Amino acid sequence: MAIEQQNGHSHQNGVSTTPFPQRPIIILGAGIIGCAAARQLLQKGFQVILVAEYLPGDQNIFYASAWAGAAWHSAGGICDEYKYLQVVSHRHLLKLAQEEPEAGVCMVKSREYLEEAPGKNSAIWGRTVVSNFRHLKPGEFPSNFNCGWEYDCLVTDPTKHMPYLGKKITSLGGRFIRQKVYSLAELYDMFPESRIFINASGWGSKLLSDVKDDKCFPERGQNVFFKTPNTGTMYFRNGKEYTYVIPRPMSNGLVLGGIKQRDNLSPEVDMDIARDEIARAHRLAPEVVPSDPPEEDLSYIVGIRPSREGGFRLDSQRIGERTVLSAYGFGGGGYAFAYGVADALVRMVEDAEFENVINPDAKTVAVL
Image (cartoon, rainbow, N blue to C red; front, side, top):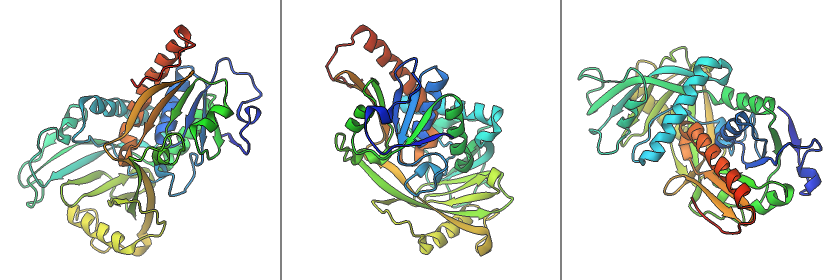
């Protein structure tokens, strides 16, 4: 993967000496959202440059895409438009699983147990998307749950998928620039010829001086990676005791979680949390997670999720002669939404491209 290190902010530093056949689309952020969007845009023939502090392959805790659970799981309590974003993402992930094994996407069984019967607009809508969905009969799920269901589930291994995306983007002609920026205005100065910018900076949008989205916040996650050959089934507990056991078949283990700690940026592993996650995972899936697994089979994962109060932001604004698309704040749902969001961003870019042609001197601001 080709990476350019940027130190200055001039036009010459930001733009390749190789002439572009068109003005490049500039993406701020190279996590799963930014990279999925770049891949889709490049496949549509657009030129793309990603500018980010962290890039595919990095292991920093602030690069959440490297640490995600990354199972496709239908979200409850969301509107129909957002459900469809997940549907599109499932379609893309399934194609990757079938055609590009190096992408790190595969299919496993999933068992989901509910403490209460599913209410209105629950996650059960996912049965319209997944394969082999069936309601579990009494006796097929632990007696302390109200109900449960089983289905085929797509899981993505971030340790495989992000490096795959980095290589794919580069092979399609995309470019990465490693640079931390403090405002969108910096990007405008770096790329004065570009007209379309995508802000996929995660919770960093809170810190950008000309965005300052105070709804964004960092949310610490910590998981246990348990090395085991028993990687055929995902387990998910939906209710008061939020717990998941996510298979990583390509890494020969299970991810045990979870925990959410708002505004906690500590990189240190909290062993009390780790022990609790193991205990909860054992209660959920005693057939694959022992109560006291060997220490040599355990390792620990810490990542800072890019969360946002009220849900993620996905919109388009015309600001002067530029169009700025926003796609951030996905918390722990980045992988489940990424490719649907990427397709939505492609459509927004095409709309902006059209608008720039028919109305190049427009100065209005409009949120779509």
